[in-house]
Length: 121
Length: 347
Image 1 (cartoon, helix red, strand yellow):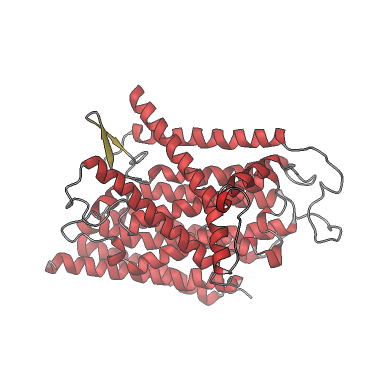
Image 2 (spheres, helix red, strand yellow; image 1 turned 120 degrees about the vertical axis):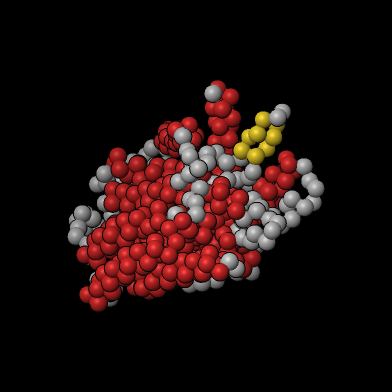
């Protein structure tokens, strides 16, 4: 099946409609609500005590590691889509090739598991 | 060209409005179902049976004071909920809401656009949704928000991998990633059954990932109120908070629609061509059937929310990475093997 450029036009239409709604609502609600500001009201939330410092602080490296692993795996996933669409034409040969590829993928996966990259304590 | 634009614009506005209304009444449904499960009455003051409650909530959100903390990054603070809401609405474009309706000899498809990369588009928009949460939580400059945002984004990206892998097994069977074609392959007659029959494991993985992607219980750690006050939207008030909450309900609606389309036949219903109905009537009944399936899954979301307690964070990550990803890779291999054997021995 071939898609032409016109098929993507409605996506732009949806973007305009949804964007207009979001922008309009933001504007209207900004105008409608009461505007009584005070120093304490504009402070960030803390459970009853004064907040210390700001939130531009370092956080656990685990989250960063998960993000890096996600990039790796998601690229693999995207790489598999064209193969999956043509799977029936490619037949046994394509299947074995993908098994090899997936074997390497699992090898890397096993390695990061052994390294403890996904250990949360 | 002009008539094409008018027809598409009308369709876009109708589907946009429908998703807003369904999301609005999901909040009402959620509260009523919660009340039923906990032996309470639920909202019953605004209108008969509290039916006007969502409207009252909406007006309240509109009229509330808007607070932007002094130390926050103001532009990003406003941008966060806008992205969340926008991406929630954008996914509905590729879902086939029904077959074509014939008016005056002209066929009007009820799908806004049938691009041949429907599934990929869906994933692309879904990934942008992470930015809404991340930007909002970071820009608040509050430690609770930051922790909530980091948790949310690493949860969402972890489950996105498993979600992508679970769909690959489906794509291997269908041979297309256009949602319309996937739906048409599940049309009744000739023993063409719904995909869930052939892909039960894939469906289960997809369902779990959909729960995690929409931040619903048991995966609602980003807004875990016992630890993080309100998670990434702690600092938000007025309609900005409303957008975050609303985006969650729209995401629930859209993901239910995607599950129904991919695994439960979309707008197809049993014996649709055997009853001797006219084409237009079949289309309308198909839309009704699709919405019945969608409402069932929205109900499932709520049912699970009031039944299953929240996971711990390490359990969540272990489930995503150590169980769902290997399981979906195994599912891909099994699907490939069976498909090849079927090709060879014709069963």
